[in-house]
Image 1 (cartoon, rainbow, N blue to C red):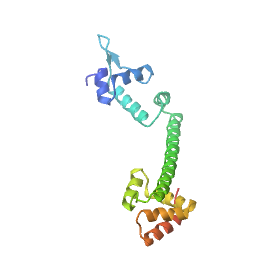
Image 2 (image 1 turned 180 degrees about the vertical axis):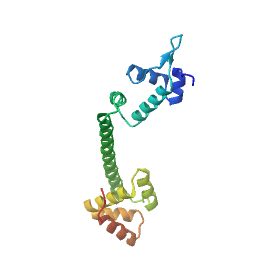
Image 3 (image 1 turned 30 degrees about the vertical axis):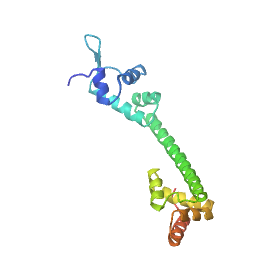
Image 4 (image 1 turned 60 degrees about the vertical axis):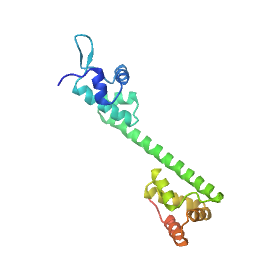
Length: 179
């Protein structure tokens, strides 16, 4: 296989030449060799390393942590990945909590507006598009029912649900849910 120039390597990795130069200056990537003219040349090992760097960056890992991870594949390096995974989990939980709060606010706002804001299908689509799973929606309804049963019932009525559907959802909301 012929070596890659910096532009070819950048194209293979889907990154800019400037990004590769930045990674080089940060000590993450080095050329395999230089041409007689002094141009940087890279091989398959560098392309593989660059793909690892990109995957770690896409996972939100900092440049300094990537340097540690790639320099030392020990359990300490893997601990950095576990820490990031836990950070992401916390961020997701915080975002889900914000979604729940916003959905409650939208629900309360819809009760004060005479016209219908959404129907059952539109509301379900909104919740799914926001990334809520069935378990998340159960949690949302459970928390809404616990915090304000009357407002929860009014909200469900604003979705043009029948009395039976409202009763069914409210009963479902009172059932235990998994965290």
